[in-house]
Length: 216
Image (cartoon, rainbow, N blue to C red):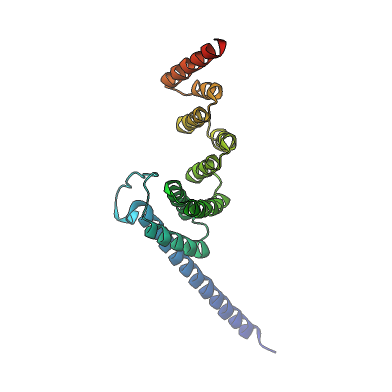
């Protein structure tokens, strides 16, 4: 029967081994997390942000080259395996795939890139349903499928209702309603915008013209 001193010694050894294994696993995970974040920043901003004092503005309408999109999706897949918490990478992949789909003249290529955008958007929003860039992609995906009312309802109920004080988000809702031809709702939302008088006047003028046209 081992003595109490011997038992205590083996417990300390086992604890040390366990801490070593856990520490090594944490170190490996931190390396993978850092590498995935670095790749994300390089794709999105063209450099690792840690080397600059300021982050340049992002142009979400700028299309990337097809070869770069393939590399981006491959890196995003690896990042998703090793660091699934990095929803930024998935969100950016969905944005770029959607942009590629919208400029594709080939229907087959459009459907492929559109499906990729939907896939990564689902992953990004499953990790953080409040990420505004992912919400924008969700709204645009709904719009491009032809379900404009679903896109408007999503933006109104999931985004604007949560951040009702944000004028940029409400202004986008106004534009969506305008594009869908629902000027009455657009006018109602525009009246809630600070500094939105010009939009309100334009919508009221449009409403008067439509009313005059229907009464002739």
